[in-house]
Image (cartoon, rainbow, N blue to C red; front, side):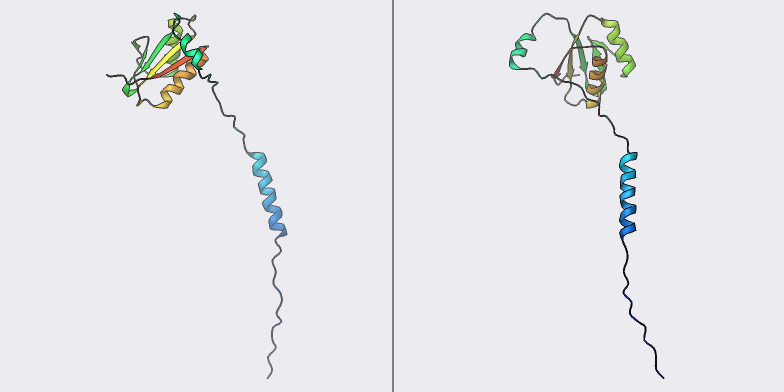
Length: 137
C-alpha cells in the first residue's frame, strides 16, 4: 500500500491590502484631528535701562498673594478668589490705571499668577511687574 504524499505548497501572505488599510487609517486620523491653538501672553522683559524708569510716580495697582491663596488688592482682601471677583475689584479701583505690581509668596501656586495676569490682560493693563517676595503672615 502506497501513501500519497501531500504536495508542499508555498504559503505566502500578501500584505499589500494590509498596507493600504494602514495608510487609509493614518490619513483618516490625520484629517480628523483637531488642531488646538495654544493661547499665549506677550511678555516684555525689562532691560537694565527700563529698571531705572520704574521709580516713576505712576499710580499702580498692588496685588499680593499670601500663603493659603489669600489675595490682597491695594491692601484689601478678596473674599473669594475667582475671575469674577478679581474683575469686579479691578473695575472698582479705576479704569485710568494701566500698571500693576504682583507680589507673591514663594509657595504660591502658578495658577493664581496666571489667573491674575489673565484678568489684568483683559482689563488692558499695559505694565505688569512681578515681585517674588516671601510675605510673613
